[in-house]
Amino acid sequence: MKHTYEYPRAALTVDCVVFGFDAAELQVLLIERGISPFKGQWALPGGFVRVDETLDEAARRELLEETGLEKLFLEQLYTFSSVNRDPRERVISVAYYALTKPTYHRTQATTDAADAQWFSVRHIPALAFDHADILATALQRLRGKLRYEPIGFELLPPKFTLSHLQQLYEAVLGTELDKRNFRKKVLSYDLLLPLDETHREGAHRPAQLFRFDPVRYEKLKKKGFHFEL
Amino acid sequence: MKHTYEYPRAALTVDCVVFGFDAAELQVLLIERGISPFKGQWALPGGFVRVDETLDEAARRELLEETGLEKLFLEQLYTFSSVNRDPRERVISVAYYALTKPTYHRTQATTDAADAQWFSVRHIPALAFDHADILATALQRLRGKLRYEPIGFELLPPKFTLSHLQQLYEAVLGTELDKRNFRKKVLSYDLLLPLDETHREGAHRPAQLFRFDPVRYEKLKKKGFHFEL
Image 1 (spheres, rainbow over the protein chains, first blue to last red):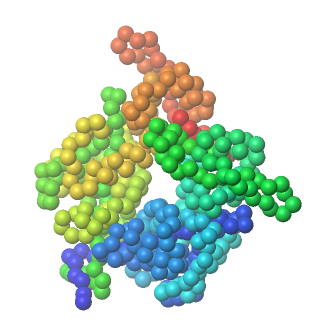
Image 2: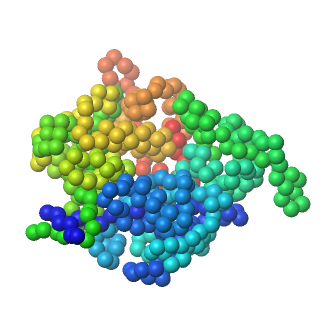
Image 3: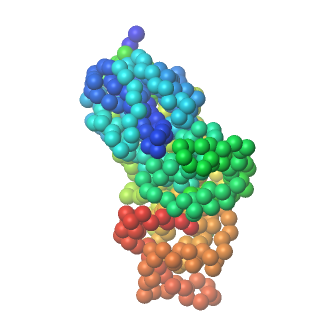
């Protein structure tokens, strides 16, 4: 069946930047393209938007189809519209970024993707289309948001030590942070619940485990509280 | 001429939330729709994206055509994709927000718009489509950005007093600010150049005029400086 319109129309895609955090490295999930254009090259997971789904639905569907990931934190990033960004024809892409906990780090390539793999953001291969621009925009957004919203917890396991949290901030912001100041500030918000458990790593002393309290955060936010780290 | 595709495609529009600041009120520019659907109702300026232009170009073109405004601060906001947001057919809209100085506050309706008019954000009429959602999203973005980036100056005339600046912050954030703290903080960044001029209002003492120094801001930003007010 053919679909006919009075004026030419751009095709619409979604592309997803999925961030993970593992072994003190911020990582991005890339798929190897199984079809042309850019066949065999690494790219962000994504694909064409169906006419009967919202953009959020399209992003979640493509992520599940191409990487097996679901139920993760997902937010719209920016819509990319350079006229020649796709060699096939005019394609406008709505980019999303997603944050996933290490427990979800299994990857499974399906449909159009030949392979799916995590890469450190410090060693990204050449990417198809304008995906390097999209990734750069997502990194900038993540760095900005991390300072003003408690979204970092989406990248950590449900229970974490203050060292884990600091490692995450250092990996994303790309800078070292003063341990004492960081702990003081993060505990001052009263958003971390100390658990009756500790975590032991190597020969180190056992460290207190915490979990983030999202209910308390939403309450504070409604009162005009501003998170900042 | 007809245009035919293998799969159905959504139509693509841009919609612009234009903020102005006048007489201590944050204002939004709305147009009265001259054509159906929602003929005679107020709406955000905007229209269909052409296949050979970027989204930024489409937003600037539509603003000029419908309101006569040009060369203003313009940034992409969010892409809205509810399946039934347009009664005609599937239309996805990329929303922008723009900030304009009071000197550009002439309005001239043209093309599809029957009239263009400024409204206080505190008294917005019923809007066409999902434009109330778009406006709410833009307001939220403006409030967030104002605190962490010096974009408020885009809404002020080139020369302003510290009272003008505080009025702007109070109008956008919808809250009163302590005069002494506000002045101390805003001057601490060394981003305002005192001018050899004063401004007199009514029976008040003449007040020092300032201008914002964007070059210095860019320099500081590159060094990792974070603006916050």
